[in-house]
Length: 123
Image (cartoon, rainbow, N blue to C red; front, top):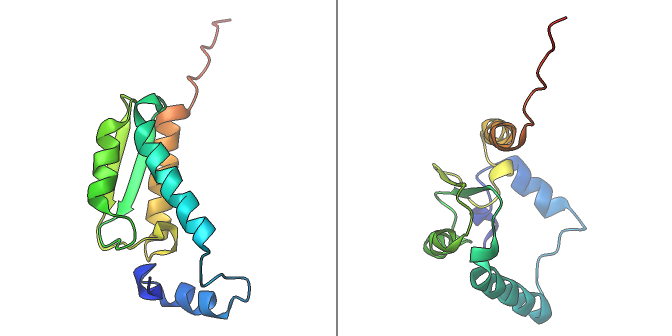
């Protein structure tokens, strides 16, 4: 993976390069655990019953969009929202325009999970 695949935000990329805590490699154990987790997510997709907001950058070269779409077809929830964000790469909240992405996420959460307002009693 190249850093340029993560985000178009040069400030974020520069900060990542300078961060002494940023891991630049993965272990074989991590790799195989991720593969197991992906397989389990596909196997158990129909059990997922909660509303789901799935965002992916249209220019994401890290997550395979075809595999993601295939997984979304298996999801058991009747409330699945899938949005491709134009020109975005992998880290959506680090992309230029992240403010709108964050606002869209918060709006979706409000729509899905905001409790109904209590009825006022006349009085």
